[in-house]
Length: 406
Image 1 (cartoon, helix red, strand yellow):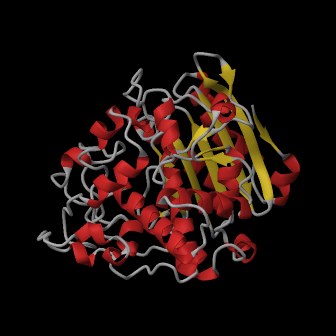
Image 2: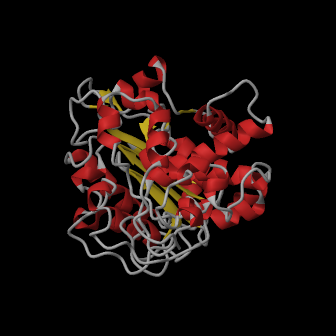
């Protein structure tokens, strides 16, 4: 059930009746089978107003969703990776605006005549404006042969740029793989990862330590058997039964992908996103600088989305080829920023400064800093089914939550 704390509601200036209507939307999605299971947390300021778990984390075993369920948060992993990268920027190990070839010389190897590669920066990678596609050309082949994570990075380093860096927005897991590789190399070179020789292993260890400092108590990039037994099973992936299925296969869960491989609880996603709210930044600044915390949620760029003809076969799974490209796509460093337009999950009523991220496994987290509001909705119904955007479901939920604020 989705439990409402009446005292927290009263002290948070929230209308309980309207809040119940918002919660009822999620309850209905579970009860009517739109999603198998869901966790919903809503917090305002220091008050956890709503916490609830409903439905099944695993349909086959009839395991109920609960506070201890680990959810495949998929691309909500990206702002986590961005936070680790920004910690390296804080320490002077990386620069946002230096060419990435300074840390990744293979990206523009001697004799490579492809243009613009020396112009790509870490800021481009974190804002999805590098010109790199969503996935590499080798993505499916690599998964089918159960390639190790390092082979993905090797492939990413060879990927083409599809446009001048900074010209358009094109959502890119490739870019986040390279950003994590840069962080790992910088940590090893600085001596900050003693005994570790693999870049992504250094990044993973550093990221989990950073998360713990931010209040995340239960998270894994490569869940072992005990964690897998608590993990939700994602439905409607489009890869059912394949031994490389997103979210579910042992191979997928062993990769530790810095662009989409984190498993964690709903409460821990809430702790992470709340770290970026104004009231929490002073405490969070012991882990990330005040500048990093502010810049990650501030719109750095707002270019138009790349035309549908650009890298059409390498787009992310959440891309809808029937929709018109957006004229403006605001993005921070890791976090998407709402801006002045309506959003698929921000809705219409949230402030322009709201920030958040979605995950292909059916997960969403967003926050409105002007309201000190944070919302986490984790499900196990893949975004590929388009359930979040049909009937503007997530947008209507966001608007209903905003309507409950007094």
